[in-house]
Amino acid sequence: MRVLFVSYSFPPDAEVGAKRVARLCRYLPEFGVWPVVLTAQEQFYASTDQSYAIPDDVEVCRAPVRTDVLDWYRAQKTRRRAMNDANTSAEPNESRPSRRNFLRPVRDYVSTLVKPPNHQPGWYEPAVEAGLRRLRSSNDFVAIVSSGPPWTSHSVARALKRKSGLPWIADFRDAWTFNPWRPRLPSWRWRREEGLERSIVTEADRVVSVVDLISDDFRSTYSALPSDKFVTITNGFEGPEVASSPAERDGRTTFLHLGSLAFDRKIENFCRAVRKLVDANLMSVDKTKILFVGSISPACWQRAQSEAPELFENGLIEFRDRVPYDQAQQILASADVLLIVLGDNRHVVTAKFYEYIATSKPLMVVARDGALTRLVEELGVGVCADPDNPDEIARQLLCAMKRPQRGQEEFNRIAARFHFRSLAGQMAEVIGEVAGEARVPLGSASGSDSK
Image (cartoon, helix red, strand yellow):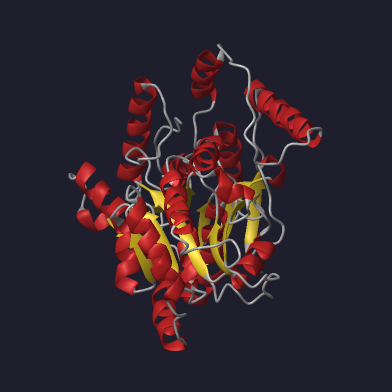
């Protein structure tokens, strides 16, 4: 079975979602499914990571992105910011005051008209054109699979389904309209987003989500659709992820948070908990290191700094910028306890969680009761704390330090469920279900191609 896999994000795109697509494509051929990936040209990715290799023998078709004035403006702004950072003596993550921009609300409103968050409208038409060319070049495609965000990937797949008549599976790596971390947009914009989501969910033959809570929300929101249309295929790992050599250690117990920090993660409560332990002489800079590696939003940085500046001054807590995938695995190999600070979002099981459990190291999760905490408790891989309770966070930090690493038997049990080979088998089963035996001649289906 040959499938067209539509995903704007694909290596070397540094976005974590690119790896889910690549890993599924790596193992799908073992189940008789041969993916052809339709993705964006490399120069249009916001950031790239060449250390994660594209799977061998996977055909990749790259379509360009038609840029506009807003793209040019953002590129110029990014370039100016980089030059300013290079010419200042301030630390990379240091919060700097900026003059108030009274035109920002107007600018942000106009931006939503041209390019709303989690969309790549400039890729839509080139991707549809490239996808149709590839579908018409051979008659052995049995299905289309799309993965988002960006949600444009689903819009492209919808257009290709309408023109080809092929069955279509829409893979949601995040919740869309009911995502607690959804961007702030005008009400009219969200009405349009809801309409687009409804169209995609309705027209897709299967809707795949990475956590059960998202699948359940889809079933509730679109209750008129068959319940079995919605399927959960989680993220996973290829592991063990720590095959690379560990980074140098300094003898301290190291807590590691690997990945970006944005939105309201309640990072200030985590820092408050650490400060409580330091004040009680239960944690010291001589014996403990708490390391955050990845991009951090200015809001999260400011909250952390204002709550416990002394923890950053003495080096007990440290923030470092994002590093390439191979370097991140080295840092991961050298850590003792693995952190996830999630805050109030109940729908998210971060992709790094699965990389974490591949290491067999204990986890410390600061999150509201939801998909992630329930999975941690079900698997017995770590401890959890309420993001609004610094005392509980402090207690669980001490508990996490005392937990041993898990053994080989436990790793094998987890790998049977979450290794991407197993997940690719689940996706292949869904593809086989929707493909069936009948084929519709290319171009026989009708329908609008509206975005």
